[in-house]
Image (cartoon, rainbow, N blue to C red; front, side, top):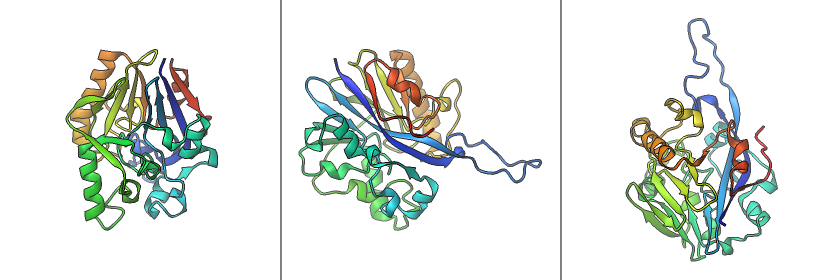
Length: 278
């Protein structure tokens, strides 16, 4: 039976308005409303079956908070972790090295998701990402000189020579047997969610297409940190709800401190590391 490992990479801290933009809104009677800086989980995944080992996202670069990330990202979305939380070390904890991986799937290319792609350069490992994400990420890296204009795309993460990019195109498809993808643009232009169909019960990695369950259920609550708010509301949200209605899966959201604890209880899912964001 296939297994899905959830690799805990520590926690990020963000203004709560990244998730729910009307939180702590200043009003006439509350003119000095202050930001709530909250802790949120960050993770990647490993899918294993009898035929292959697939990594989903590669976490943050180990030197992200030591000058590798631009200053504004270190200030706005600081990352707290120990050595054990680093992507390569988490791989080792499940008995894997980069050379054991048969494929990598990037849900998108933000700094907390694509920071260890260098480990798969020159390894003859196919790296799947949506074409819209690749086009935007490389455009941002080549055109924008100010890191702030690049938002959370850090070109040094994904411009390594030797990466075997395999763009996926359109709205839906299959990466490998047992892993289907669906295009959920909004948070990023090429954001994709994944449905793991061969686990004991299906699992839907919504990922950063919805930071929290509360962004899409029971009603739509637009998060603040979206690349295109209209596309998110018009395309991503209906598709998320369609997958949930059709497949009745166990869902994994991008950075949800309210639901993170339950993911390791899903049949076929094993959490690697404790929930350090508390």
